[in-house]
Amino acid sequence: MIELKNIYKAYKKVPVLKGVSLKMEKGGVYAVLGPNGSGKTTLMKCILGMVLPDRGEVFVGGESVIKKHSYRENIGYLPQIARFPDNLKVEELFKMISDLRGQKGNSEDLIQRFGLEKYLSYKLSSLSGGTRQKVNLVICFMFDAQYILLDEPTSGLDPVAMIALRKLIEEKKQEGKIIILTTHIMDVVEKMADEIIFLMEGKIYFQGDQEKLDELTGSEGVEASIAQLLLKEEKGKNDSSQKNGFRFKLNKVAL
Ligand SMILES: Nc1ncnc2c1ncn2[C@@H]1O[C@H](COP(=O)(O)OP(=O)(O)OP(=O)(O)O)[C@@H](O)[C@H]1O
Ligand SMILES: [Mg+2]
Image 1 (cartoon, rainbow, N blue to C red):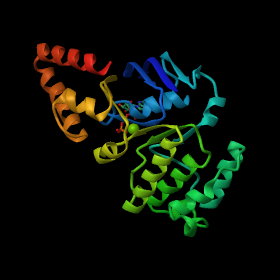
Image 2: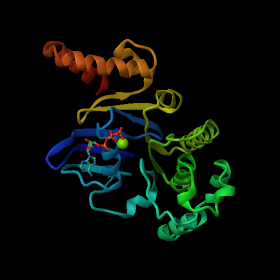
Image 3: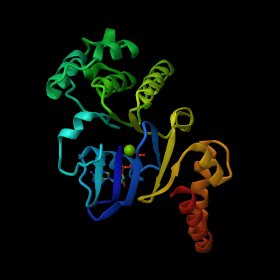
């Protein structure tokens, strides 16, 4: 279980998260959606302890994690932008991560799934963007963590790698793991997400499954529904009574 209680976070007094509360209890795929800059990465980093909230609490597996470290052993993380020393070879990177983590990890199976065998002796600096993403995915999944946080996992992947990733996520879901992912690709959400969390202007506008989202917006499909949410919000800015009415409806359905 992962729970965020009333999280506030501002960067240099600019608020990003303004009272975010969220509960992810069951195993499954939770898609965190929202426009660029809406705070999706910040929210993930709060769960990881890489960003310290100004207020609020984060619980992982029922325990408060603020300023704690050991719970991270239960988390696999794919950062939106991963930076590793460029002169390392792929195989050296996997070894370094295993050494840091103090566990061997199961990279062989993942290397095969993502077709990375021939790149093991390549330096990271010589890899294409998509191949780097595959390397990062191996690192994220190699320790069989209970909680898997994927920040834009499909970025740069070719269709073969996309299928491999989907299969992997599906397997983790069957094992009862909690997978949180962010993406701007609605097709990925439709195919994979059990629950959608829509973040905008520092608040959660919606949490629920795709059916509930369609019902709320009167649209069909995640792309159309999210577009509706954005359009209504934009329209509501010019019409405060409608905005309040829509917010009320959202809160009623989402909470
Ligand atoms: N370390 C930081 N210092 C200052 N501002 C930051 C920092 N990290 C993020 N921000 C700001 O916080 C806001 C939210 O950023 P965040 O990266 O969480 O958004 P996001 O929803 O992940 O966006 P994207 O869809 O582009 O990945 C943005 O306005 C960003 O500029
Ligand atoms: Mg982001």
